[in-house]
Structures are given as C-alpha cells and as structure tokens.
Image (cartoon, rainbow, N blue to C red; front, side, top):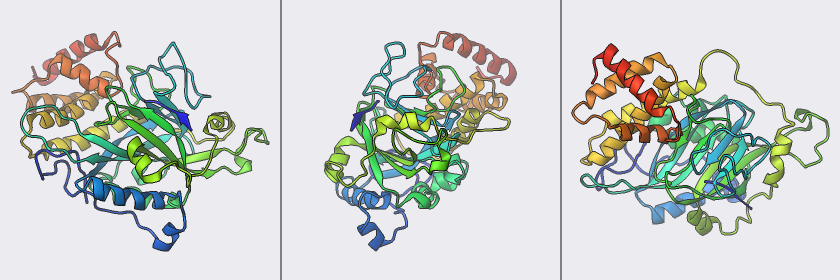
Length: 399
C-alpha cells in the first residue's frame, strides 16, 4: 500500500441539534442494496457502506451528509493534493516526488477519471459539531465519495437533487458500480489547509475548479477505489506487459482511523499494483471534452449557486459559520470573475452589497481564493483583486 498526499444536505451544525444548509436530516438515505448479494460480496461498495453506516451510527450518531462540489477534468485525471501546488509534469506517476513543485510522497496522488475528461462531483460525510457564538469552526470530515462517470447527472453536479438529497442521488447514479470490488490505493495526511481534488494539470491562477475539503485539516485519510477492468481492445499498442489496467469509477476518501477500525488490514479488498497503473493508463483511449465553454467556470458558477442557497438558508447563531458560508460563495465568484467570466461580476457585486455592513478584508479575499487552489504566492493576486474591486465599484456602485 503506497503513501499518498495530502432529502439531506448537512454542512456542520450552527448550534446544538440544529442542522444548517440546503435542508436537514443526518445519516439518512442508505443506498439501495440486495441484502443477500451484499452479505456475500466482501470488498464491494455496498459491503463497505453497510459496515461504515453501522460504525458511524454507533460512533457519530449525528453525522451529516452534504454535496461536496465539482471539478473539471481536462486531462482525464483527478489529483488529490494535500497542499497548494502549481502545475508540474507528473502525468506518468501515481505519486509524484518533485523538489521543484513540492509534491512528495505523502501529499499527492493521481488517478484516472473513469473514461476520460468530464465534470465530476462528490458528497461529504461530516461529524456533527456544535457552534456557539463567534469562535473557530473545526468540523471533522469523515469521508468523501466521488463518482467518475462523465455521463451521470450526479457527476456533472447540475441537478438540484444532488444538493438536497446527496446520498440517495449519488447511489442512484452509481448503481452500475456498486458491486465492483474496492482496492486500497494508499493513505495520506492533509495539510494545514486540508486537501483538494481536481485535474492534475490545474495551475495556480487558472480557471480550473478544484474542490476543497472543509474539516480535513491535518487529518489522515485512506483512499479506496472501485474500478472496472479494461478490455484488451481499449488498450493501444496491443499487449499490456505491465498487467491489466483498471478504470477507477468511484473513490472513497475515508478517515484513516475509521478505515482501520472498520476494515482492519483491508484483506477483503482487491490487490492492485497501483504504482503500475499510470503507465497502463497512458495506453488507453479516453474521451475528451469537445466543444465551447469553460468547464471550470461552469463548475465555479454552479457551486457558487449551491453555496448561495446554503448561505441564504442559514438560520444559525454563529457569526463565524455564517462568514464561512459567505466566503465559500466569495471564493467561487472571485475566481470566476478574475478569469473573465462576465456574469460573475454581477453575482459578486450582489454578494458584496448584501454584506456591506461587514465588508470582506483583502486577507479574507485572498483566503477565499486559497480555498479555490490559488496560492498567496501568485504574484498578481493583489493586483488583480484591486482591479476587480475598482471595476465592481465603477460598474455596480459597490464600495
């Protein structure tokens, strides 16, 4: 096992016993399953969910489930990043080790996104937290689930059912892969700002959409991939001397300690040589994004609308949590506007107007951009923010 890096929508609690977000309800919505098939299929997604739900019910009785966000893949890759990295050429490596970009074993992993390019979204499990007043927010991200099926409504992240009933909608779209056996890819520890997932080619300051994982800061996770085998006719160059490639279709990023408690050594999972997979993926035919439009901006815009819904539906008593939701919206509108998405200027102006009694500081804006994968090291961030602020003031009358 290799080391790697870095209806009910339930963001963490606003106060004891009160869920906040698009709608309420914790721990509901188990996936459809055939009880006998599940019992006799160790290592499958359904088998994993049966055991995980039982464990969470006992140890995290108020856990919440929510839509996590969407990213665009333009190179048929999904990279888990335990820190903010700029683009670097590591497309033939599962785990990069590079002094130039900072990727090291323990803070990155790259996987194939199913059949190729697309928009892919996930759902999150959070430990329920209690927040009173204006103090730090520190929820615990228990797990994230991602579906790599470019044709599914869930993957595209454009169906409101994925926001309001995330788990049932996820599993209704993932039914084709529920009996696939999982395989442990490896463990990683997120950095002080948590971890991200997105295209391996995403660069600092670009329009790529990355998904940040609130509540994962400095926590360790295990990645389990549920994959389908690849037929020989799909492999370019005839033979596959390195073995048989697989296409990851679902990945589960699960808290390491929970994974140890529930699945032990992982003996029920398939044994796949993941280090050899990138070489084989390079021989596969993959589907490409073709046509106009910027998928990254589309993801940012769509997820901005989701967080607007969460923000406007917030009825809790914690100013810190309220600000968190406002900043999630801010980061997406700001990134989209900075890369030239015209509608985002008016969206951003509306937000700034609504919070004019508590305006965002430049530090908060930069922090919001960091959550989108834009590093403070981007030399033009402050200059771009100043120009954007001037334009919004001039065209929309917002100070």
